[in-house]
Image 1 (cartoon, rainbow, N blue to C red):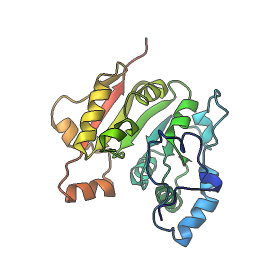
Image 2: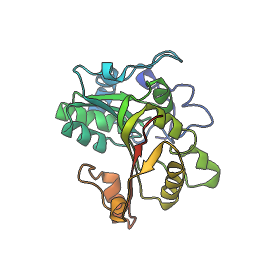
Image 3: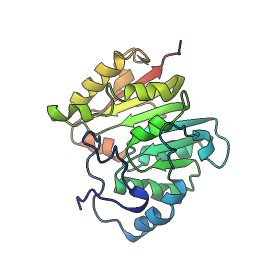
Length: 245
């Protein structure tokens, strides 16, 4: 299936249907019965309701119990990385943004199987979510193996760039990590160029192993494993949000 239309909890907002949308299709193969049930039953319990434009969302208030921090993953794919992090950090609240229905269903399956109570989902474009978050409210952000948009005319659709780095800088706490990864060297160079020159971010790498070797607290995903099997070498980048003022 390649139909981009959705209904119910996955209704698209104005950004999602605009000409500058940053993602591709919303649906892949038809979902199996259990995953369809998770979309219908579990997603409404975990889906974030965004406030009116201009109002702010309280990320800490999204969770049933107090959390020491809230972390954000933009474009969580099939959800393996987010679910791993949530399982290993039960004292952290996790927000994941992803418009792809099959990926949302995949994460919901892991949330259900592992009884992860610290996950909330924005099943759509991440930009309205970022705009609704308060300043300095996110302790870590991940943008991993995003769509490289390899055609030159589509380069402005890449998530990491001049439009969204200020959004991320605003919501990240001082000293918070921004983690980026890709197996597409064109996108790696693009992300590195834009993030290094942004005044609010500092690249932490000091030696080649810092971007060639994935840290222990950064689990491999199936996508990454497929990329390696195909001969593509992923690059792992960590930036920190410089102190304000």
